[in-house]
Image 1 (tube, rainbow, N blue to C red):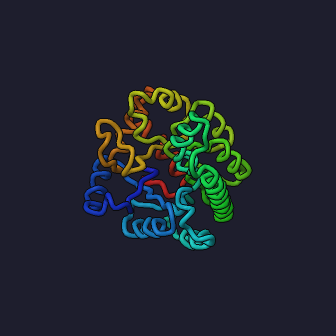
Image 2 (image 1 turned 60 degrees about the vertical axis):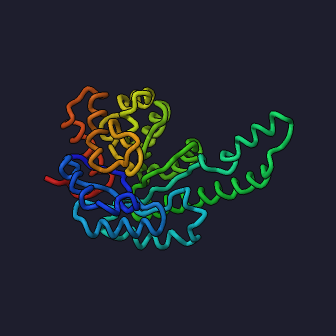
Image 3 (image 1 turned 135 degrees about the vertical axis):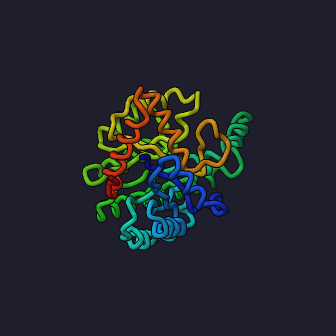
Length: 286
């Protein structure tokens, strides 16, 4: 048995054939799916899906890229949603600096600097960036506070924000665990988060030939500290790269992890399922 610990089944990509998607997952021995909330709307949708399907569970949270359009009191709503018995974690939440205005305007800035000028709108972009980073930090900390209060663990989104993410999370490490989903960082980062008691989750990226650093991380992480996921509809593993991803492909991720660790698929399935059951605290299936 396998568990897809991170998917987005409420996304429009799955609207035409969701029943078939769930069936194919079961046929691939992916017996439980965790569909992830990224804002209030998708968090409600995740809970509704969990209510409708016995093998689907939910998380509720505010993704860092959603904070601009999220009301300040959103965590009050999250708290009510999180009381549902099939909500197994808070998130995904965290910090994402990849889409900050200064990053998006970097091409203009580089061109301006090469001619001794200043890119148009640079000052405005920096002000907007500070506001976004501050708002992301506020929502991240509020969700960590909520998770600690509700005795839930957290699903963490981190992109180009490693140091700030870990600094924010560290004071909570004695009260909750976080899983760094879609992990693609370094071996040093793995060691750092493991020392704090947190976990990582691997996606279809592990099947990419050029992901050599990630392959070393897969070999390094001890059993019990990693899960497998799809992050579908994104990040399809080989040989489906570039196509819509779906939970059935969790098996392909697990097969690659098994190959990298020199273990049978059945052992990886057992280890990751046990780790996910402990982290998300849902009942084991005999």
